[in-house]
Amino acid sequence: MRQGLQTFEPAGQAGRPVAPLRQKDPRAAACALRGVDRLRLDAAARLFGDVARAVRRSRGGPTRLLDLDCGFGFVSALIRWPLRAEQLLDRYRALAAAALGVEDLALLDQHFFRAWPRPDIAVVGLDASASALRYARRVGVLDATICADLETAAPKPDDARKLAGVDLVIAAGLVGEQSLSRLFAACPERKPWFVCLAPRSGEGRILADLCAAHGFVVEDLAIAPAPFADAVAMPGVAPVTGGLLARSAAEAQEPVARLIESTGPEPPRARRVRGRR
Image (cartoon, rainbow, N blue to C red):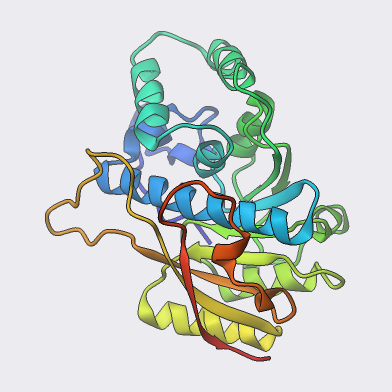
């Protein structure tokens, strides 16, 4: 399973391609993301941030979030701090041209993220790239990490204990059936909410059926329009306008829109479309 936002492979030593997520810092990954990816990142951050606030109001106390296939944690950073994808990624693009080693860049990132008020969401990052997780944890974007590919194996006992306390699972890229099933199985007492950007129709049906089989109610969410004047539709590119939310039948009694703290005139609008009660 691999996050759908990061696909570019720059040239490495001796001309061999090196995938951005296998490198030791996020500069190559940031340079690989184009305009449509930035719009998708911002849409994901708006949707996931709103749902995280709904979870906090529903369950009370701090929210523990799992970023599935998180890479260097770009989406988590946009949720935790008042940043836009353009600001975050252009910063790394500028630093890519500077003669900075990984140690110097990590020090800059530590100061950058720590300068913001402490976020009220704890984030666990799950990814198959140990180097991406190590960097994101070091600079403070992630609070804990799980290096695993749940499509190929169930989580190890230590990782399963980290998953057991998760309130919300977010996915900005593709989601595998095995990964989702193993995530739900690792949370036997209190199932987390699950939210992802709107998948393709066939994938959406598969995910909805899988969530329903685990006793979840599945809802479609509409993403509020971007509040930025320059976040316009790109020619030939369909904007990301919705997502899929799954939560337990008991928690689904309360409409999502009522749970979201007042952050603007257009909170996500939910309509129950599938699920077992």
